Length: 284
Image (cartoon, rainbow, N blue to C red; front, side, top):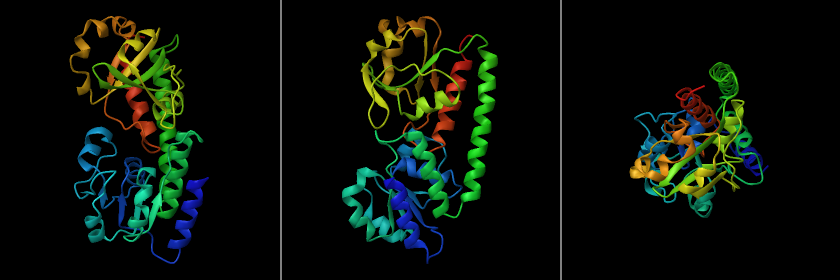
């Protein structure tokens, strides 16, 4: 409810003004949401890392680097004169200073108190209202549902006896992994595809939990998909521990292309695409 209330206040404050055109996104989920509305922001925080870890939607060359997600470049923002600055809770303490540079909207997308995927959709539609892109947003959401339905048909054909449960992971180091469970965007994507979640972990606001690599040996009959970039894995892939994993020995492991696991409503679509592609490389 807090996001809806804050968006309502923002819309009232902008009512007498033109639709915001000069937008700065200081969180990656906000950047995703704006780009998915067909709007190009002036600047995005941690631009180079966005291109590596988030990847989609792609950033147009004109988008500037707004500094880091924890320490934005205030001098640059002052020069850009934004009509709207989008932040998340990480910048709550900085919000009063940012408010001197332009209208600020804090998007609390991830919480234990709500369904994160449903909130991403709500935020997308509310931003569409603020930016005058409601019809476009509704069209994009319909396309998303159509694409998910097509992928469900593809998976049913690939696995006529039923697909395995799916656990999406990210490699943190040669000894630790992140597992995406309840209330995560990867699990929402898995469920949107009609698949069974396979990460049996307790999670917090972000839907993720860190575990030892050795804990993955408990995943019986589960397909495991690791999100790129995979560089932290290093020698892990060739280690006896990894090669002994049931899902590795039985050909139920694949890599997924980069997708941000804490993103906006369309990160669900990107993650779902990675899941489909990963499962299609495995046996039926």
